[in-house]
Image 1: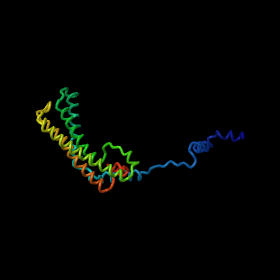
Image 2: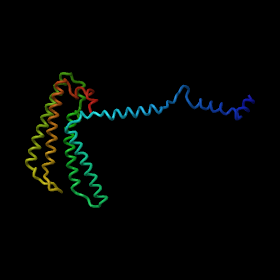
Image 3: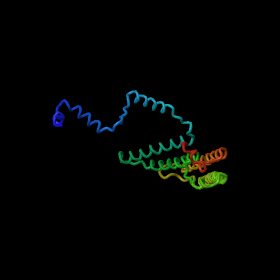
Image 4: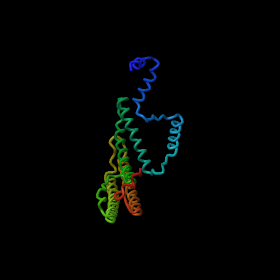
Length: 218
């Protein structure tokens, strides 16, 4: 035992000590996977294939108009920031136009949500209703929603006819252009609501009755 203690400190026995330390630090049977260069290159190639096969067929007319309005609003907000804090001479019309672009984004974006069935809704009750009762109630909701959008179209048109000649605050433009954006948004909501209602009728269920069927819908 004394000889073993003496030889443990000799230089020739250091590798044995290091090996013993490694086996105690690493759990037995555990392996550390290492990615090779070929695996990394293949992962980048697969990512490139996914990017090259981007599918834009799911987007509609209102999506692109809403995107254009959004980036116009972003450009106006940046111009307002730049003119105020860099040039020390703020362009007052940028704030007003940015607000009007936001109005267009809101109403046209609402039509996108109608098409994708992404408005706030409560489907808890449908879990406990019989299927025929749920189908009738869901159809009634589709009819009420579509009728509401039709009524909103009429209200916005009446509003435009009454105050459409009012000028903007900082520009010599007519506010009717902004109101027509809201009108177009409600028209698109009505059209998409009719399409969704017809689709629900044909397939025999809506998102209220079968939410899991819409989980993969963007």
